[in-house]
Length: 239
Ligand SMILES: C[S@@+](CC[C@H](N)C(=O)[O-])C[C@H]1O[C@@H](n2cnc3c(N)ncnc32)[C@H](O)[C@@H]1O
Image 1 (tube, rainbow, N blue to C red):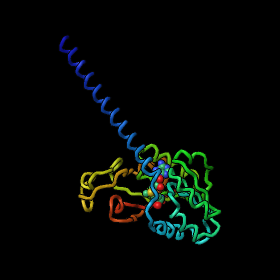
Image 2: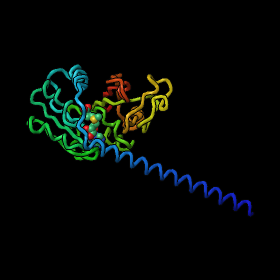
Image 3: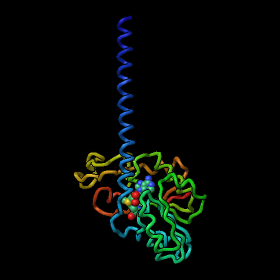
Image 4: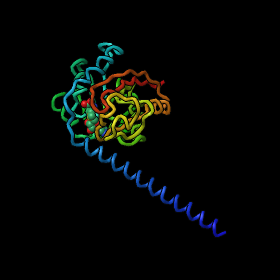
């Protein structure tokens, strides 16, 4: 009897410590996700020309004239949307970002609206109200899987076609910040290179499946650093 009581007490103690650890980890993950948002709120993105890659793909699918409205989630100061501005005169452009620099293009483009907010603000937009929605290197900086799923679900709801230009490594899901490539997965190129802080990888195929979305994807490496070699362009459709 005594022995039984001892075993139960020990089991209870072990369970208690496990739940304490899980609680601590989930606090840690929450804190990291909040840190990531705070980091991006105050950063103007470096100049690049990756928007051109997306534009070329869009043009080959839609042709020269069939795009009337585009929304970018995580647009920063609008450098990707500028490619659409130059190629589709009169197009309606919308940028969403947690960083207030998303408002900057309003001073130069009358057909542009910048909205400060995160994935939750997408809920206020109408179904199918944009020809195209896209993200470029944004979901890899959101620290919570359910928030990434929310963003993808909402973006596909408000648009006719969704593009995600985001990094993906098969079998890896979650936080890879400050880890070496070797620690994340065996066989990656340059295994000693380290992923930058606030870097997250998500299993997009599982997410698309769970949201009943179909996808075509192709590799689109952007640069050699951090997550750069692992980018894919996902072209997402509702059926
Ligand atoms: C690496 S930058 C990419 C910016 C832009 N897409 C580009 O390609 O130049 C990531 C952007 O995502 C924004 N971001 C991060 N988390 C976000 C969130 N939860 N909701 C909206 N924007 C977010 C950041 O503020 C930042 O502007």
